[in-house]
Length: 158
Image (cartoon, rainbow, N blue to C red; front, side):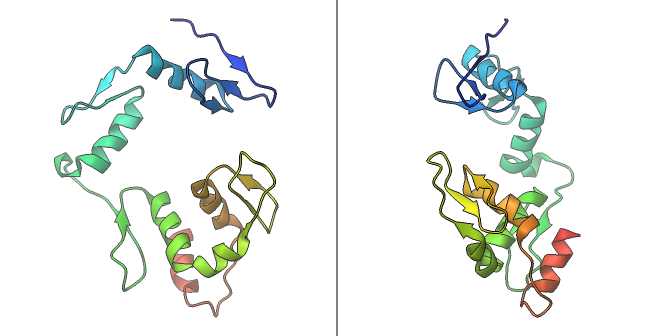
């Protein structure tokens, strides 16, 4: 099927079936395939189906880890924390949200953009979700050597 791509006034691709918008045409392409019902990658452990094989693989790692031969996880470097995840990025987000809350909270700023939830005081970039903000905060947060979590942060940023 050939998809028709439309853009809004901000140059984002818009879905003609729902309120979804995307900056990239390829992202919109895969979104439209969901509306079409084209989900060619089924999970052999449950009824879930996916547009891309990579999404199926991530689903299996997070929802059916017991079926994998080797379960690699990324553990939080803090001694009193038992957090671990199969995604390295999720560990970083956890660390920033929980263990470096003082520094990340200091970076959060109100934004006038109604489509965004927060912005960064350090560089003034705005973010549509807190997860986007925390991924960004990893590049703007600067703990000093006397910060309680300095060594742990350095270990997961390396």
